[in-house]
Structures are given as structure tokens and as C-alpha cells.
Length: 592
Figure 1 (cartoon, helix red, strand yellow):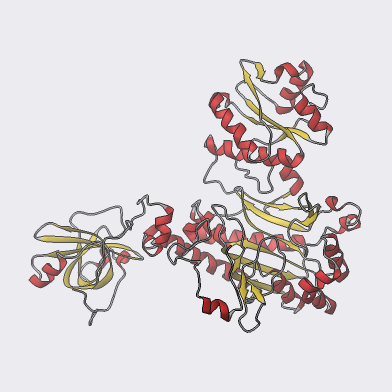
Figure 2 (cartoon, rainbow, N blue to C red):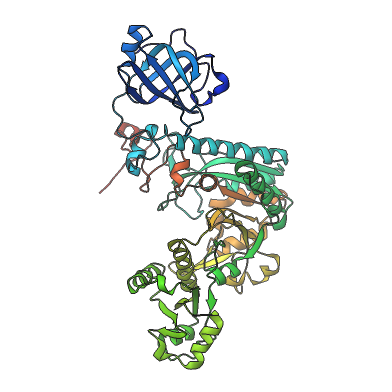
């Protein structure tokens, strides 16, 4: 049954035929989306990457062609030659719906068994089945369109950067293991027994070394690897748009990058981004929104009630405040009827996932302040809450009291959840902002030491350098993130280019001189020979593409993604290897 193409050569793509092509002879090749045999006439929807065309085989053609057509089933690969004619029963749902091809020659190029998943966009198949049969999943028009959009986004980014004097430079995939926040993927060296390369978590040190080399403006769209616990929208291997510039400070980086962002959204979505993009400090973001990537498409700002309740008889408040904690709240306007007792219980459980020990609820009903803690509050405190929250009839207020970080984390995520649950977010709105002045350090209670919020090469703000030794928690970084609708698109920093300051950073982070030289000696050595002020940014290319596509699943924009368990169901990877291979690598595997 299977034939070669013979003399047939494709002349047109299935999705490109229009009324103006009527009368032309064409050769189409593709997959059978659907076939309908009506006895004396057979209709076939033929699909390729551009779309679908209807082809018709009737009983006026040679009997062997008609017999061959009667054996065709879904996902067969065929070639047809024939003339385009006007379609009697037009289909307004597809661009080719005004025409059809009357077949004069037909070849079956390959056959298909019944696919384990339907090749259509609304198949409702499980994610695991989609990943196992990814090559079938990728036949779907929606999936192909996402990958095309991804490719175009890459071209648009390259176009802008090339036109602004950036040089695209590839950096190595096999590099040195260094501590950069997550576990490295290690690659054993056969020719250097017992030694390992690491796959890069990012090209961080390489791009800094390119600035030392005098390249001035660098970029690449590159693969990065992190062996970390995966969430729904994380992958062990991901793509990063990596950018670095010399002789710059924070505003220089922000200015050129917001022009890049405006270019991307204009070219990809036809949207004009108003520049400059709003700036917000990390402290303001945490105080008002509880997270460092706030979604500003809705209100529900977090309000501090610590001063109002600092003398409260309610022990949860007074003890937390006495221990340096805070009391904060969000108000949901006019939504008291949307929250049942059962619903509030679910919200209490939700905030506990973020470290909160409980959730206090206040309702404003018929002008009355009602809460389970009303009896512990004075009239002055109740009036203070109402005034500070600007509460009115029909409002509901949620309070959390704990240490600052827990309150921010729990209320910030509660704010987002309630907005989604109430469906008040305008999904068509595009809200961008820069978050700046991140802390340089954060205290790791498990290790009882300060660790870098970003990485050890991030420069402190000039006016805060004097506090590095005396008060590390006070030091702000020359670091910045770009946020869109509550998602971080990218982040970066100005780097340290002073050897003395870099050594001081390593010391504060707990590295002794031997450890510093062992892990970062190449960078310290390079800094001796004239290092320009430099900085950069990295965008999550997969996430950016996901947002441009309007999907919520990052796997939709990656051709062959992994599961949340970091496995490839299609290739059945990772897998065991032979003892011979392990022996070549001087590796002995002990799983006991």
C-alpha cells in the first residue's frame, strides 16, 4: 500500500489555498485529519503545518485511485495532485473553507495505526500521555503555533540586540562546578578519571569574563541546567536570554532592556508599551503586596495594623508584636457574601502553607464590625482598624500576625488567590514593572549564616558598602527584576568589578581563602587585569514565550519537556547504563 512520491513534488501548503487559486493545479502533501466516505465520493481533510485543505476523490477518477482512497484512515501520510475548485458547502471556520482540491492522482506515502491520543486541540488527554507521545501531541495546530511563536520571539530578540551592537557569543556547556544556589548536573570525564564537569546553571561567570575580555556587549539564547525540586512551571533544563554590558550602572541596564521589552511586545502582540516602565523598590513591593513579583492588575494592597494593635489584649497580636513581629491585613471590597464559613476555613488552611499560624477574619455587615476576636478588642482599636483599612459595609478583612516575612508571604499569596477565585483580574491587561534595590544578603537560619540573595558577584549599592561588616541585613544590592502580571520575566544586577570588594563578599558568605581560590580562582585572577564596571540581565525565555502565548503551562512552549519528576516519558530517560560504560568513566554505582 505504501508508495514513493515518484515524480510528485509539493507545490503548495495545505493552509494557503484561497479563492484566487481556483483553476490551478496543485500537489499537496500531509496527514489525514479526517476522512468521510459517502459511497460515490470521499472527502479528506488534509493537514500540514500551515492548516487544512479539503480534498475530494469522486467516482469519475480511475477506479484504482478511488479504491486506494477508500483505504485511507486518520493520520495516513498522503500526496494528492489535482485542481482547485470552488467548494459548494463552504466552511467559514478555516481560511481554506471556500475551496477544495479535486484529486486526479493519489499516493499513500505512509500508513498509521490508530493513534493513542487524538491529534486535535480539544482532546482532553492527560499530560503524561501527551508527553509520552509528544511527537503526536506536536501535530496539533495549537502546539505547532506555540513553537512558531517561540521561534519568532527568538528572531525578534536577536534583531533588537544585533541592531544595538550586542554580539552573540556561545559559552561552554561543559564547565566547572561552582555553588550558584541549586545543585549542578554533573558530567564525568572519561579522559580525566574521577573528575567532573558541570552543566551551567547560567553562563554567569563566562559573561563576566567576556566583559573582562573587552567584548562590551554580549548576548546569547542558551540552555541552562539546575538539579532542583521542580514546580509545575519549572524544568531541569531551560532556555535563558543572557545579556551583559560594560561601563554601565542600573539605569543603563533598565533603559536598554525596557526598549527590548517594548520591541518584543510590539512585534509579537501589536501592543505599545508605555516607557519608562514603572520602578518599585523591593521594600515597597513586600510592604504593599507581600511578594517580590506583585501583580498590579488589581488592588487588595496589604495594610500595616501594627501601630493600631500594638497594645492589644489579644495575645496573638501582642506577643508577636512584642517579639518584633507585625500585624497586617488585606481588605476585599464589597465581597463579604462571597466568603462562606467553609470557604474561610479553606483560606485558613491556605495561609498555613505559607507559614502563618492562623487567619483572622473581620466582616462589615449592616454597619457592624463582626469578628471572632471582637471581644478582645477595644472600641478604639476597632475604630482604628476601620479607619486604617477604610472599611465600609459589605467589606471583608483578613489579618495575619507573625514575623514580617511570614506575614508578607501568606498575605501576598492570599491576595493573589482571592483575586483569581473572584475572577476580578483583567486577563487582557498588561502590567509591567521593575523591582529594584533587593537585599544583598538573607539570613539562612538552617546554616546560621548570611547567603547571597542573587549570587556572590552582585554589587552592593555604593552608599551601603560601609555596612557590609557591621550590618549585612541593611545592605541593598544593585539588583533588579522585571515583572509582568505577577510573573518574573527576568532579573539581573550590576556586578562587582573590584577584587578587594569581591574577596570581602566571599568572606562574608563564609568562604575561606582556600575555598575562594578553589572555586572562583579563575575569576579572581581575571579581575587583576583591568575589569570594567559591568552588569546584565537574564530572561526566562520559556516563561516569556508562555506569557506571549497566553498559556499557563510552560511545557506547552517547549518541544520535548520533562515531567515534574525530571523524566522524559517519550525517551524513557534517565535510564541505567551498562557496567562497561560506568567502568570507562571510573564510576561505581551503589544504590544501597
